[in-house]
Length: 417
Image (cartoon, rainbow, N blue to C red):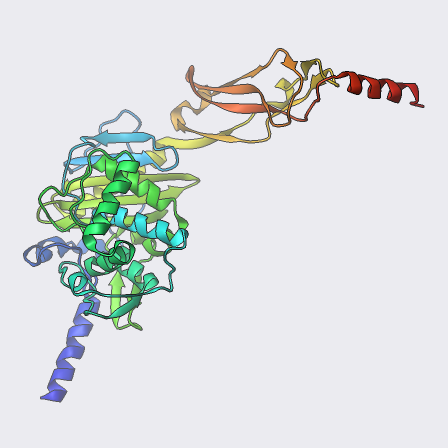
């Protein structure tokens, strides 16, 4: 009987390892797992996956209507927060495991502030182990490092691991949820109310595509998160527990940097996807999709749209426009302006040729003048509309001309050979 049990367990492990959806499903109820995991085209051996780069249809231009099979969606540029495309983006909906974006933001901030380290060992509470849904099957009092718990929460969307991390910061899940709501308020997320830190369906647990995009862009700015969110497969417990990223775009979409999936019966299939190409970083959020296939293709379509139609341009002043500025009452009669930095501006690629610059310098400065003091601007226009400015500063300091300074100059001139 003992030998039979060993053989049975070995066969079960092999079967689970070969499942295309990975060992850890998202937090979808058991009765829905089969329906959502039968998407074999995502894992076809010939790589004819519909979300594979180059498999998309012709990308629409700016102003075109995108057909996204979701209740709500948004495309946002990470660094500026500019919204590039949206539909019903403030509709309040259950977010499922995308809730973990805010939980992870708090954990990452705690790590960077020194409150936690990746090596810190945490102990699983009975409450954390009771979560259900997507999990790594932590046992009460089992210890695991913050590093491994982050892997479980980000790659495998593990609810139990997320609660352990939250309890470490706030003492309880309730306290941690309070921190999440407070951070949401600091970010101006007026559509968001968290009831738990896992995303399991709960009355009143709501947010919006817009708010998810904002918290996602804040999270992805922390480089440490990409060490986990870009990983396709990993393991825990010395290889005994396999992790497969619930975000299939990590494997198939060029430049994908994360970020988080979510699936429950109440939320449907959701996704916050981040990607970066040639200095342009985007976050696409889709909520309330009917199938897993819809969420990945919807996010991909939004990202394709952004990369095809937008780019950053770097702007600085033209040296020929930087002429000396007269200085009144100074030990020198003029100061040289400089523009030693480049500013980046997000523009539509189709309007790149309409970009124009206008340099404006102060007509006269009054001493004293301090090096680095603003003395002008470069105004940046696209299609005739101003989109921003670049600061022009004084290259050196010029003291005020006092009696003592005048005397020093006179002596210098008298004895100059």
